[in-house]
Length: 72
Image (cartoon, rainbow, N blue to C red; front, top):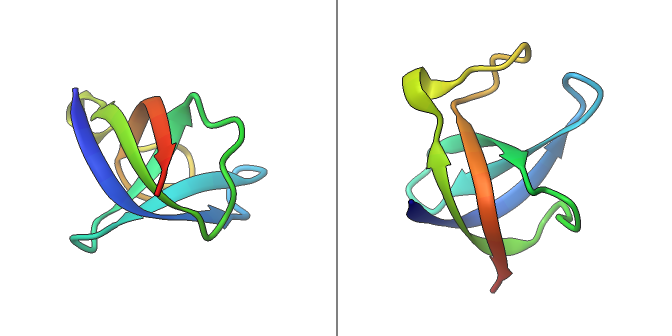
């Protein structure tokens, strides 16, 4: 498991998805434990990028399976 820091965005793809715009500029689609996330929040997420990138239907970036979220 790795830690990722950045800002949360909500996009209107696939009926609404959350993405993390990481501090290094990479963009990840968040899957798993996303309840309580809010657009604009600065967070640190513990999780794993799904094997092969795990692109979903929206093709909006690799999928990051969220295990834990900490607001910064």
